[in-house]
Length: 210
Image (cartoon, rainbow, N blue to C red; front, side, top):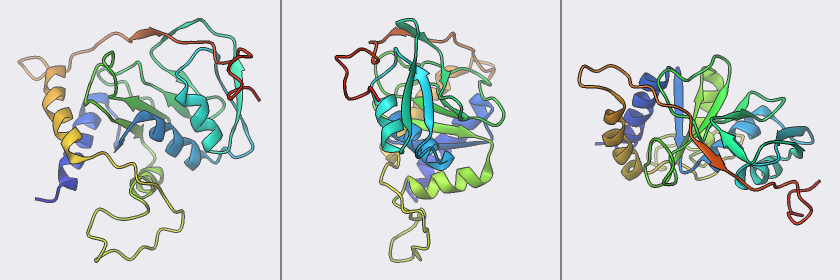
């Protein structure tokens, strides 16, 4: 069996539950945000995010070439928020039935004890953009196709990084996602998570201040 098929099966299971046409799994949500921002072409553009958020979010904006702009926010972050003005969303605190919204890149996190779906490590991008889906699939795998490098043509001109979700993590996810349905196969809905985050706009966090 091709081990890539296991990850593909997990991606299909996420699509079925969230209502997204396409899902691309990666090794963590930080890389999901980076891929989404990179595809969006944010180099030199201002990206607005809450001042209270997880530290990797502004780092990924910087890595993708964007300019961080903080907006005042409450220290308790809930559900998801948009990286304005893009269609990229940090959806780390949301995982529920039919959550996908048309035209968006919703970035999920399966890492950490507080997440709804815990695969130890991992993340994903939900999208309905087929061209973006194909690009994400290649970019996350160092520009390669899901085949032996002896068979690949290496014709992906955008480069790429190695952030593919290992099949071992996907296997954990496949087991856990069954718990998001009742005994009759009906999807279960869950409230958004709510977590406390530091204010990264403060002067002591100089790495984030532009």
